[in-house]
Every structure is written in structure tokens, then in C-alpha cells.
Image 1 (cartoon, rainbow, N blue to C red):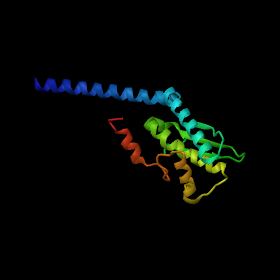
Image 2: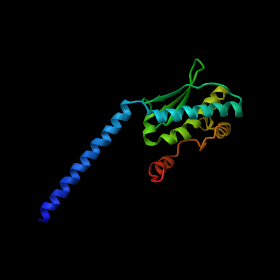
Image 3: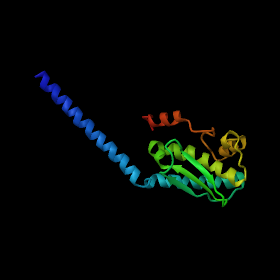
Length: 166
């Protein structure tokens, strides 16, 4: 009797785990094949407008910087800002990272990259500290950047992902 119950338990556990794996695979597949959901897209637009307003009121810079959500970036990168030979400044955010923590991408990474875009607009191409100079930090703070450190703090992401109270 005990052996039969044990077999049932393992069978149910195996089927449940398999169902969970299929569900998680489907979620990943759906995320990869579809654009970001409308709610996240709206949050990005709202944050962009806020950053544009802050750039104008605090730094007297009035410029639109194109924002591209890319699924072609390395998984290590959260975002990057490009100044091309034509003088165009573009901000790229890594779509894959939105799956981990969309709020971090919007509240931390977007202001970080916007600060780089403003530095490019000011023709400051400093390579000191990989472009994260004191001037850049001050701009980032004026844009209400949550953390104007040099790079992403992976601990912040981990803490946010495991926060049961969010």
C-alpha cells in the first residue's frame, strides 16, 4: 500500500513539474516572439516624457532621443547609447532584460542611458571611467536617476525579483 501511494505521489509530482516546465517555456517563447506588453510600453513613454521634461527644465536641453527596444543585444547589456557618424543619438534598451525586471529597466537603466545621451548632446565624449564621469553622475541625478553608479548592480535586480511584497 505504501509503495503504491509513493508511486502515485512521484507520478503526480513528475506530471506537475512537466506542466510547469511547459508553461514556463511557453511564457519565454511568447515574450521573445511578441512586443513588450502595452502597460510596459506606456510606462516607458511616460518615463521618456518625464526625462525630456527634466532635461529641459534642469539642463536647458530640448531634444528627442529615439528609444529602441532591441532583442539583438548581448544578454550582459541592459542598455546603451550610441552617437553615430551622422551625429544621431539613439538609446537602446535590451528587451531580454525587461523579462527579468521591467521596473528596474524603466526607473534605473532608462535615466542612466538618457544621461549618456545628454552627454553626447553636450559633445562630451569622455572615456574616463567608461563615460561615467562626475559630470555624467550630476546629469543622471538631475534626471532623478535612482542610482547613478557606473554600472548595473545585479544585487538590486535579484532583490527586486525575489521581493514577495511588490
